[in-house]
Image (cartoon, rainbow, N blue to C red; front, side):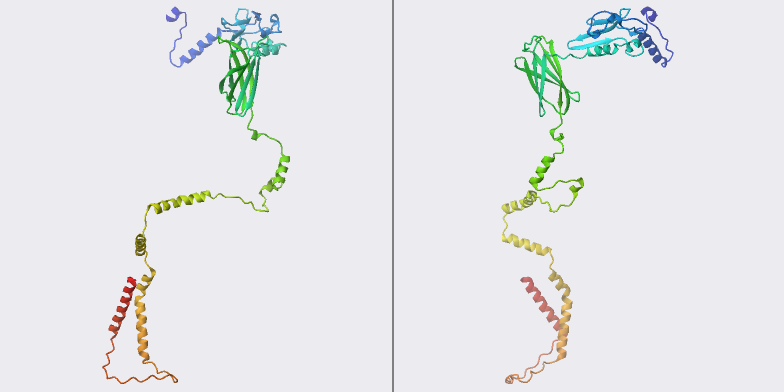
Length: 393
């Protein structure tokens, strides 16, 4: 009832799988009503530069087209027998658009592809959409490093300069990044501006001038090529400069690449900076310098430091003496025993000066010889006293 009341169509969908097919069928029926496939001859509906040099009454027939409706501001040049637009053009500001509702291949335009004026028609069709060069604008570009200087000279059809116009330049870089540069008037009909470019490549410059109402008056398109850095420029072999360098430095020309790795007759010397080592030494000595100037060290402090070091570092002499004690005592005992076994020393030989005989003394009782234990204790006592004297020193 809704379809009948609204003048539409009703599709019963028994499952969700049928819904996509319904949309496809409805789309095909809707599009099919805008596709007209029937043989016809294009009819002229107005004059246009696209058909310049082509007789509109002698155009080949077409086999179909897409049904469209022209816009109110569009200019229709060719129509079908039903009155539908076949060739329409439209200009919006400085931009242009063109619509050809048929095709340019062997489906609907079979006769047009083999037509002798087909190439001229296609060239004029595409060329009409491109901006025409405005001879009243002369664009000059100058590249100074990464800075671009733009200069525009503007004049009307009679040659009089255009003054007090808003002039803008749009640069399109190699990565399709745009930047707008306002140009200021510097002389009669002359506008200049500067900008910088970030990378080498080809830039497209579009100049547009507007009047006081904001309407475009003139436009021009120019190109700019930013080359690579001059150091990448190939200047040839440079044999002249190379020979001058050889004479100035006393060198020689390497004829083969492997000669660059050949051993040299004279070693090459080079200067090595000393400031890193001196800086490191100064950084290491800086704490000691601060300590020497800030701390007051006396002789007593030095003696305390020496005593502290001697207490914690054992001396080899004491260790050797400590372990060599029993051995030394054994040698002393052996020497004493050998002296006892030899007895009294022999008298001096002949020719010696005789000693005077001392006067007789009263007999004194001879002391008893010390025992072995007493002799050993006497030796140990002498060693202890010697050790004490060494300590006191």
